[in-house]
Image 1 (cartoon, one colour):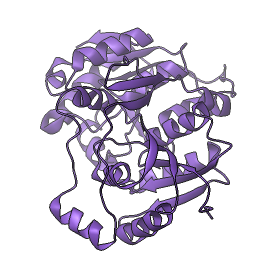
Image 2 (tube, one colour):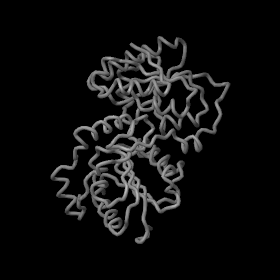
Image 3 (tube, helix red, strand yellow):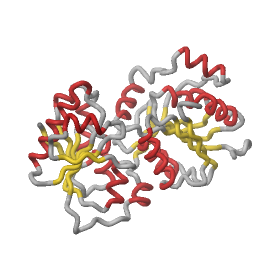
Image 4 (cartoon, helix red, strand yellow):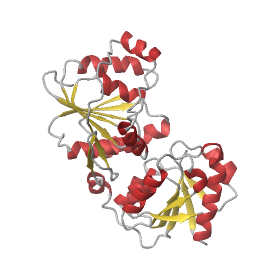
Length: 333
């Protein structure tokens, strides 16, 4: 149980990458010696829940009080958390999703001394520009605000003039943002001690993602055909994003010589623990292109420059530049 008189650090995460980022931030900001509270805030599906449960067990959160906010009991548990934290001084508040109304409740409703935004994938780039432009627009509707007030949760905080980003991306500090960049030292220490099997057949990995709109499946087929052509005879494994549905993929892409695989943990963990050698990884604009290259610099990672999909991705050229700076290569359709 949390002790009322002590200051604490609070971490709010809803996705595996946000939780990995909170783990890195916990060490970077030397929070281990202080009392902490981890809040798993409404993961979007069962696969996300499973991956986050795995990470909680393996990333050193044992002994840290963890509150799971599910959709069914969200407001009841949220009210309980806020009543407890109302008697506390939050030292640092770590937020995973800057534009989620769920996360917004915490950074607008709690009394914190320091606010730190951790990574939320490539959306971090969009948030970075939003803070320098129109700002982060509130996602809390009048109806949700009234419901929060019913549970005595008052949204009384505004964003400070300057906030901190804790990120793996090479973003620059400005008058509005202080940026701290990391390269996953905790993840490397915990997961990257396994060796690579020299006897196993190298695989080619394709990283799925739910981005792409109505033409997504058609473009995925074109991208996969491109990868198959570049690696004749190789086994190509499609690593499904946690939001993708196997039935949909197999119906649209099942004729291709590709194995669809849904692993129970993030792809970075799969690569670290499996011991399987990879000839290369490919995707259009998956965050994992960047994180895999940062964590496994000797692995060949390729971004598929698909201009049909690029038109719908904000800051595409900036994202490409970040990929290239990390050592991710490009291959154009």
